[in-house]
Length: 465
Image 1 (cartoon, rainbow, N blue to C red):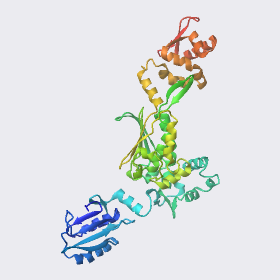
Image 2: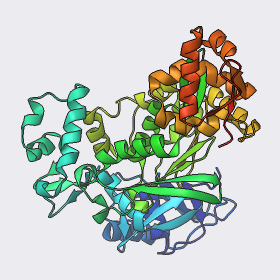
Image 3: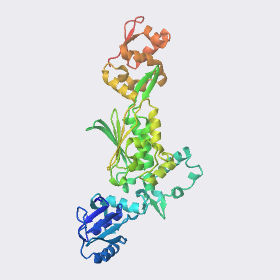
Image 4: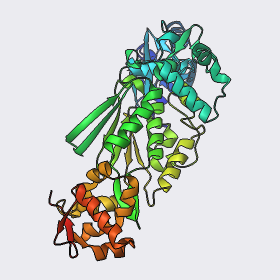
């Protein structure tokens, strides 16, 4: 037998070891031998029979627990064995809480103490009631969005949502006696940061790790934060690259929005809001990082394990219940299956990579193969000669979608060659000479082409403007 986390040898008894016993009770239990040296050899302890009575009395009077204290004999020596069970409720010694970790006993304080106390009571942080908050303090728009999504996904019926907001919250088990629990306030209050600092999302666009180009913050009820964040990321922060299949214009995004939404929802549900830091989304031209202060169950410590079949253990189960009823998330760990399914819709799109540590969870979203190919191709082409890139915004603002489709073959040709004539235009579009001339005149009108030569021999070149 050797010393380890649950076994210790001491030559004599000191009352300071009561802290160790408290630590054993709060950790995994343990055994303390009194009368053995560091090598585990019995050296005996004086007044063993007196300690046999005194130690149990001290344990019970200071901590309110019972430990087995036994006397053993080794030749002429007497030694004691103190066996401490793991207790389901948190145990204190002289008003302090101790925890045995490895070969050390440490004091539990602050956030860690709050977490341990809640766990010992069978409660979660998001299930704690908050006094003096009424339904009238909550945001009606958040309720309407919740009801709309819940009905659309079949989680609630029209009849269910006809009741008052308070009845809805009661039915969702978001009240404890007369007080609303923290999950309800975070999900529906217009300013949950009054109670939970850091209950918002921060988005930034980075050129390099140290070069932030612009950023935004998304505040308000968590129910509304999801759609607001998705809109911002996929309209302002993530630029679709343009490709063509025949004459069809394809807008290729870096990362599938359905997969990103699942990652965002996971961050909200699993975040440890006690840290005071917002969820952070860092967007680059070729990757996205999503970070939160949350944790994942130990059995889901790697990316591979996350994408295998597993049970659902949200860090904030009461908050997860609200989002489940809204239809935004699935039960039984289906979120990671949905990420896989969404990534599969983009050919050769890699799954996101998860880095899970004690301080938080970082998710790296990499681009699909098609986006990466288009991005690298764009970088190789000099912007001055890249017709489609230089004029894409002007075309989208001035030309209709129908016109863009008709002109696509001409634009692709011009991108590679820089000039075009009527004969080439007819061959590309299979239209009459008059129709092609009308196409060219339209491009001249918006400043993309400049005509050179007389009517019959006119050549059109990309404008230098």
